[in-house]
Length: 338
Length: 117
Image (cartoon, rainbow over all chains, first blue to last red):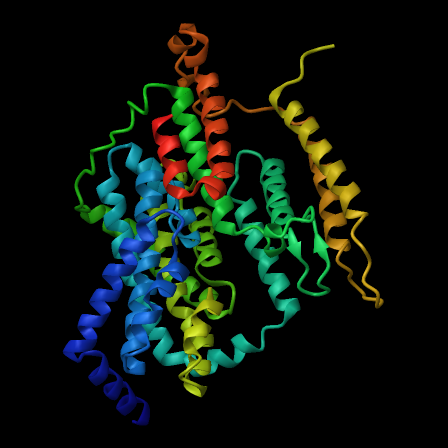
């Protein structure tokens, strides 16, 4: 009964007209910032920080939550339309979203991204209310060994996506890890592969690599093909409506990936990126038409989108215990979650 | 000797990269205190795995590159500067120049140069 009372109290605050306006403004601003390639939830939150200083703590939290959801969702738009992921968490969306856009089904892909994000977010909010106190203990107790296991799982899942050549997938994973160890070793403080450059001490950001590889490859491909992309129906968004068959097709992936994404998000540091890749590879394995993943399969858009928004909510689990202990440094906690 | 295929070229380049990487990994200084896993272990493991994978790739049969036939072959007959590969090289040079000029010239001038040039 106590939990129900608290829930009602929470709804009372969240449904106040001012807070609804805040969440709307936050999602709107976050979506626009997230759509710009290279600007993700962290930049969006950093931009909104000064505004929240004068606010009530709960309103500030509501605004920030809106911004972070919006930014994660907005990132899918540039993934689908430009093949240039706006956020690291939407890289997996571009695998099938961009091929769909090329086939003139950009509107459908955007609509699926919106539905999947909404359902993923909502499902995980329900989980958040039910199991957050229990899970926060598990999440905080995650040690180095568990993280290592999780990272190996994540990398294996990504390698399994490259079904044409396993060797090439493994090479990509090894080169990726090689890039990631540039900088100062967090354990010993030793510099690795920095070539005495101050800029490299901090390492190379994931989004910079992802953007360079995806966006530049696309630009070069268009140059090689010539004609400035005459085959890509640039201005054709297509219908936003989904048929009943399509809804039925994506219902399974969305619900599975929502749950998976939530539990991935609970682990500090794992978050939306790993969640979306795991969701994508899980659906690719489960689907009967798994071969068509990467060529514009609607499940390939639905799964990572549901997973990344669910992970976004899941990441509140390790965050909120800190917030409850001290409301003031919560603004610093946000940065740590991603 | 037969001509090397795409995979074999790629494997050779990767093997060179792995060798250079390993050479650098051996130069990572050891931490003054003894540690079970020092900073140089992980790079060494990665370098060796890349070397092994490059060897595997060398003997793998290349598959047709998706979209390779979509390359505009008509354009290759045009003037040298406008062939597809020349366009790719010019664009990469322009992007590199932009990255280097951004700090000394500032965003506005560098971006104007990139869009006009």
